[in-house]
Length: 236
Image 1 (tube, rainbow, N blue to C red):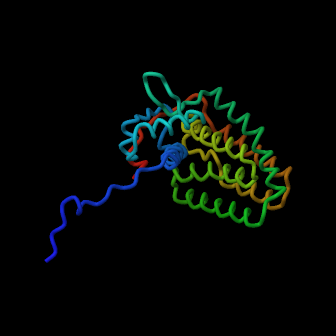
Image 2: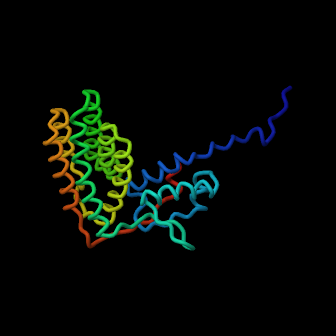
Image 3: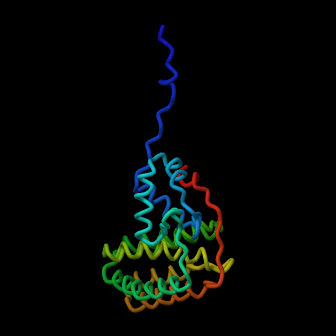
């Protein structure tokens, strides 16, 4: 007769703790989806418990996010999701208008048929999210579209810059977007893809500039809102 399993043996093993990279990606995604809004305090103990890691790991991730401008570290108070000012918001769009038309033009010189198909597939995901009125997915996919273009252009420095600016732009939209206004219209992405497929660098640059202008003009730089996040849900 076999012996009954001990209580310790019957207990399921604990899940593997999240890595720093996964924690970073989860927090960044939460920003992109407006689940972590500007001004939100990131409590180390709560994050560590939710992710199953030490506070040291959480501090490392928060330090990285602070370096990228997504988190503000306040002595004796802790870490907070950054709250870009209206001046910083304008600076972000000035920088994006200087950088992204050039990235679009660069991609026109090297874009493959497979890359164009990938962009169109991503665009269809955006369209499906809009059809479902899935705002978190719309926001995340719209930001990822701009990062995808930079990734395809093949310049690591520009890619890193775009990742930072895309996340900052999401914070800005969270603070200043007007209700029921699509800040990153799907049709403008389609027009940009058409220009890239045609290898028309001038048109692609013009589409990108017009698109960024449109995003900025949909913002109301006099209003902002802050909601309470569900930290535990980030690591479910």
